[in-house]
Each structure stands twice: as C-alpha cells, then as structure tokens.
Length: 155
Image (cartoon, rainbow, N blue to C red; front, side, top):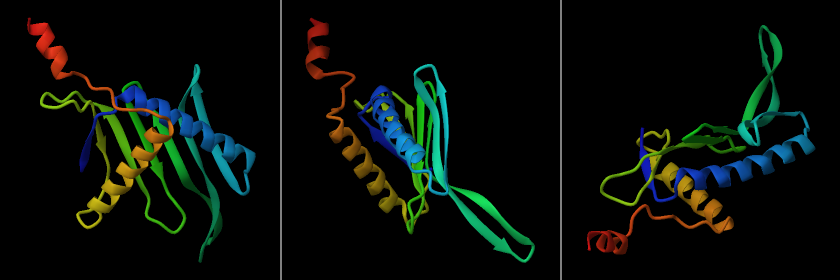
C-alpha cells in the first residue's frame, strides 16, 4: 500500500476532517433526495459520517435498492479515514495515522490504495485535496523539532 509522509499532525487532520464531515452531514440531512446519512457521534465528536444514495439494481431475479456511499469519514484516537466516491470518477480515499519519523519533521503517515498505473494520479489528488483543506482552514504544519531548539538545548 503506497504512503505519503506529512508534516501536519493528527490533531490538524482531525480538526479539518471533522469540519468537512460536519458540512457534508448537514448538507446530506438537508437534501435527502433518495439518499441517506449515517452519523455516529461520541461526546462532542463525530466517530463516523457516511452519506450516499439509494440506487436501484435489477437482475433476472428481481430488483432491489443498494446503498452507494458518496463520502465516508471514520475517526479514531490516533487515526482518521476518509473516502469519496464521486459521480463518473474513480473512488479514492486515504487513512492518516500518527507516525513520528526519526529522520524528518514528518509526523503522520497517509496510506492509500492504488494500482501501479494510477498511483501517481491518486497521490496527486490526495495531496491537492489535503493542501486545499489545510489552506482553507489557515493551518500550517507544526514542526516537531527545529534546529534552533536543538542547538539551544545543547548549550
């Protein structure tokens, strides 16, 4: 499974994805045109938000309705998951987990599913999505350590 290192911490991801989940949940509940919203809350936080549409399926054995997810968020203690299934596009998503790298300021690992053929395309889509979310929220990466801090602690 491909991964991307990120300098945004897990709290920053949680904050922007909670906000996006809230926006999508409110929109889904407001406009439930043949759709659904599955919302789970613990305390003051979402633990899961899933929105989608009911799609009719037909076969030689009859017809039935199937849920097709548009957006899914899952929030855990040190892990966040998001996936989207846009109309007329490939489904994509990612998991963010806390991971402090020893050789860099990166503090989260973003994992995603991709084939060899679409790895770069999905990675660019995820990176652009995260950059846009963080910019809209005016969030900047918080470095875990700085050279100036390291030098002053040695004297």
